[in-house]
Image (cartoon, rainbow, N blue to C red):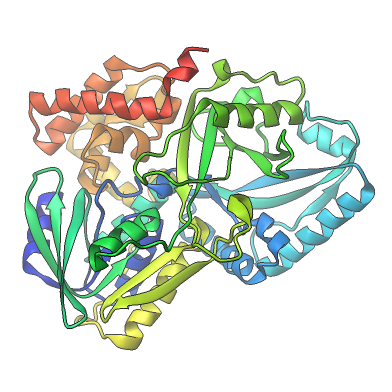
Length: 517
């Protein structure tokens, strides 16, 4: 089904559950609803994963730092879920070694060893190896150029990395294969409430400017950092459920720092934070992240020069010969963490990543907080509460037919669709550009099966090319706009509008201060 067909379905059906919010949390709820046999629809005011779920630290991990605050339950849940995600999405979630150096005294190294022992124990049985303790020489061998002054050794342990946006899209796509419906660029404008129950939601299709109403037995607000915005539209009152923190990330070529493992370094200031290098896609390494309170608009999260300099200074302190400057930066990105507001606030870095689920109306449930790694258990716990109060109209359980062909290592079971598109026209197997390992077939696949409606959808959340495009590439944009226009049955005017809009989007990842230095 294409987007038009999903819209037609949304207008005429009464769903068991309507999930508002197409990030990783909403995707997890949708997946669990389908496993239970619920007739479900998911909507988002923008592209799926266009908020926090494409601007995260790209890590699937337990959250080692949260042991500092004795949050054992949260870390245990995340580590258990890490194992599930590694098994379920092996094409998108990969184990990666982390190296945590230790400086000053042998006691510090001993403490880190003990903490990682607890981390291993909380993980339980796992395919990921337990941590090992390294000497100072072994640390320097694995991280050439690291600051060796007072270096006592280090700890090597494992977590995992992912492409967060594509993970979200795959979870949603799998649910669609099992009968769910999903529509991006459909914004909730108002709630129709009678007798403390939501009868329907009034939505605006921001692509066609059409207004539609969606009816469901249960509604779930899974909108992340927009939670309070949605609740205000529901109640008409100002809501302060969340206290988000902002994290910015700096993207550099992978050859500028050691790339065989994730290196953890202390910040160059006295804020007692740790930052990391994450070797990622397209020969890039992500440096991150800041963690500061954010009071602005949820849609206006940007990176400034002070953020970037903080990150570069920290890694230059950790690797004294690196001499990283703004000229080394390929791109930057910023996102908000949807953290719950608490009375005993420890500041952005110390704030908990716990989540909460509660009823706002008789049939409207909100889930807020949490972290990417726990999205499956968050979805399960959310639907447990729903099933305590309601029953599904349908009883069709989700099924899955695993594809094992050539494209499975990249797209999992959706590789079969890529293969089918090549069968339609083998000429589409050619690369879109020698610099990027994507074919025309994949561009068509992203339009046809993974909801891409705009150039920003394609270049940032389906292919990650935006992160790697240091210089704006007009020729590539022309080619992609033509491919998408053909698949989406769009006009020349649409292509020109898309290129103008993408230019503004690209500048969010490549602000002017990068080129002015």
